[in-house]
Amino acid sequence: MRKPSVLYWILAVLFLLWNLIGCYFYWIDQTMSDAAYASTYGHALTALRDQYPVWATSAYAIAVWSGLIAAISMLLRKRWAVPLFSLSLISAVISFIWPVINAEFRAATGTEGFIMPVIVVLLGLLEVFYARAQKAKRILR
Image (tube, rainbow, N blue to C red; front, top):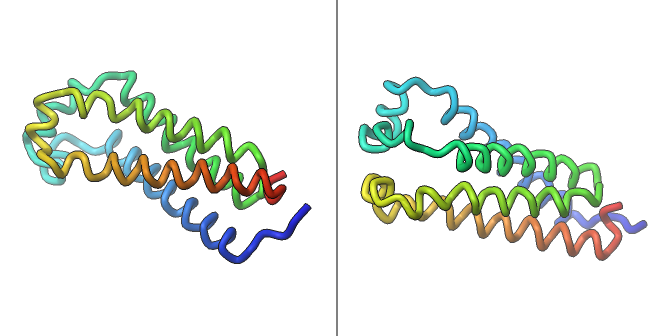
C-alpha cells in the first residue's frame, strides 16, 4: 500500500467540499418555498418547478448523495470511491437531460443555464478519472 501525496489529500478535501455544496443545493431546491424560490431563481423558473420530472429529480438526488459518499470514500482511501463517483456523474448527466431538452427551461435560463451542467460534468469527470488513477496506484484500497 502506498502513501497518498499532498495533492491527493488536497483534491480529496476539495471533492468533499464540492459535493457538500451539491447536497446543500439539492436540499435547498427541495425544501425552498415557492416565494423564496421565485426570489432566488425568478418567476419563470418557479413556474416550471412543478413540471420537473420525478426521474430527473431522482437522478439529481442520486448524483449529489453518491458524490458525497464517494468523496468521503476518497478521504477514507476506499476503492469504492470509483464506482460511486461514476454513479454520481452518470446520474448528474441524466438529471440534466430534462433542462436541456425542455424549451421553456432553456428560455427561462438562457445560455447561463448551461454553465453549471458543464462545470458539474467536467468536475465529475475529474473525480472519476482521478479516483481511477489512485485505485490503479493502490492508493485506494
